[in-house]
Length: 621
Image (cartoon, rainbow, N blue to C red; front, top):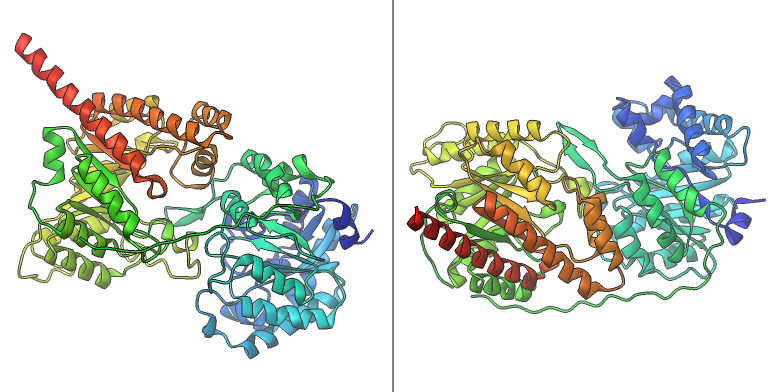
């Protein structure tokens, strides 16, 4: 039975990542060249996916075109590399009925004009003919951020072959391509150009890919596909890695079926375990033929506001008394109405500072410097500005810091920053000229009136430097060693990633009580089961206890009750945290400032009660 005939009546399982496995094995050069130098290695990976339950495998040819191979001096080996890839895949599938797709990846990233359409056509035709001559069962066009590129090469491919063609786009945020074309419209256009299967791959994990699929109609004639990433990639010690749980994939499998997906595989970070998880739930399942599409509507408008005050450094405040600070993310769009409504509510809740992330998860937002200035001038609040190493080189970082000093904003949090590939522009450069340690050292030098190169700045800055601490790691001992090193480089105090259990709070206290630098404990109210599962499975540095996720899952169909449960859990954590630490750092989910305002009021009331009890005890003594 042909590939398309099977898709008419059942869901097919595709393979997962090739590059991720090779990268994990220490292969960090041209992965397609391994078709020639290490064919047995490639064949073993194909076979492992087939054994895991994949009905469909793809050739190791994602970047086997002239434009990408020339980076390695292999531009004259296009035919040889592609031919070998098909041969290897066929050997792996010798004793079963797996279909083999010839894979062709996109070339254009966030700079569409960097490669002309004519260059793309020439490069594509050469690779296309090589794959067709070797007798693949179909073509997989994947990871296309630029719709013009994909439409161009799909048109060529459809004229050259009657084989099935799968055309997949990658999107910047759920529901939209980087040029703001709605994904649903893009897939409709691809179907009209002759694609037999249209869908999504890469960039996003199951959570956000399903959000996008909710907005996608079932095609009129084609079928839907989805190849999610395992999770968001983490960046540790100069290497990317994924932490996605295979069982999380199994739990999401039926949701993909319910959105109409008939070809389901994996992209970056996925392994045979992830594919086996999909196969366990869906292999040979009957696909749906009807679905209701969710339409998302958004509206927005703006205002601006003013005041000013000079305060003691936060590290001094938190040493002397309990202190509450709250993170409120800058908006992703230009309307700041809700942001300033939230800032006002948080001021009324009596917080000591509002913290502003620096394009968190590499997602473009309004500059935290500009919003920090308005918060300070118009609301009389203390802004704590996050500074990531990701977006600016040494010149930009120093200029940014000099600007903050000039504007009188002296509270900063130094972070490494999520890699660019996580966010809106995965092809953008992650600068990382300096590490977080080096950036702390740079700021400390500026407090001495010196630039990073040792030049006299003419004045001394007065930055209070917070450093990040992630307690959600396998080895807390190693994490504490990093804290000690950051103190050596000049960190004044610490702000942690969110903690979700009393046990972890106690563990952190026991392992850090020797440090003189105070700690603000990060706490974030969960808003529901999906939120909890996404954070636990897809966001690096966050882990949520099974017991909490189970309690949230019970209320999956009762969002208001789930939110209340999230607040009550956080209040319980505040009680424990204030018994051990003076600093509470509340993280606002999805700009839902009413949640953190309530929690800030609770924390301040709880802190006042603790102070009264302490005074009473001292009087008795």
